[in-house]
Length: 157
Ligand SMILES: CC(C)(COP(=O)(O)OP(=O)(O)OC[C@H]1O[C@@H](n2cnc3c(N)ncnc32)[C@H](O)[C@@H]1OP(=O)(O)O)[C@@H](O)C(=O)NCCC(=O)NCCS
Image 1 (cartoon, rainbow, N blue to C red):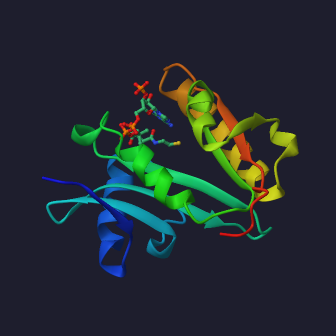
Image 2 (image 1 turned 90 degrees about the vertical axis):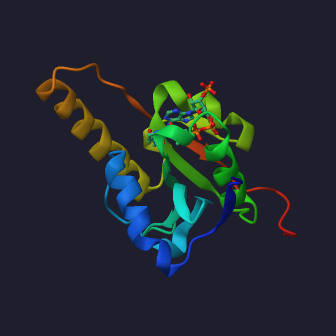
């Protein structure tokens, strides 16, 4: 069965929430107009969103692909479409160990102090929250990184 990558519709909202909950993606700010989804056999199997924060910054996030569909480039296709018509500065908060993976889309690691205020806040909340949970659950801590793709020079798109 082929996988379709497309903008989300209102009908996808519940499935986006279910997918995010199932994979422990942060359950806040999951609103369908911001999402691109991957659909197979009338089922949402992956999603990614671009959020606009109060300070005007854009954050690519809530990237999730169901377990049995991973390793086939679905996440990469979702990111490709989400970024396709975007020229402005975009940031990502992700695990430090995955930072290099996003280089193919032009993202580079920056210091959290160089990020816009809302990204900085989300980074510290994730960093401190993740640290606390890893202590409570006695598992290893996966530190976060802030990635930045500066605005593209070509504004013709
Ligand atoms: C991360 C995730 C979306 C990747 O989906 P996918 O469709 O398998 O991704 P692709 O096939 O396009 O690419 C797979 C590669 O992405 C890498 N990757 C990139 N970012 C990643 C991330 N944040 N977390 C885990 N793996 C990531 C994987 O290591 C893998 O690398 P490899 O091919 O060298 O082994 C999926 O593993 C997932 O849903 N994980 C749980 C939720 C999560 O961690 N989301 C990321 C929040 S930033």
